[in-house]
Image 1: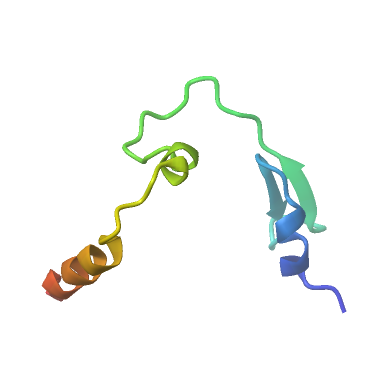
Image 2 (image 1 turned 60 degrees about the horizontal axis):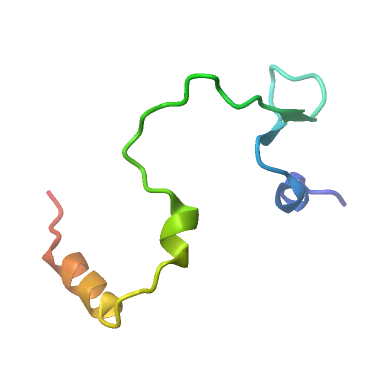
Length: 71
């Protein structure tokens, strides 16, 4: 049996799996990179993951998590 989730790891950057009522057959498509890229506030993960991590990051994360409250 084939599951659509089986193909997800094989998708390259800029590719998508289109399924649903508006699509006659499930399709693997490539989405062009936009000419005018959004100026978002997200970090560049590839650069961030290469940096050294602080030794107390788990403790800091737990402390921040405990300081949160549900409103």
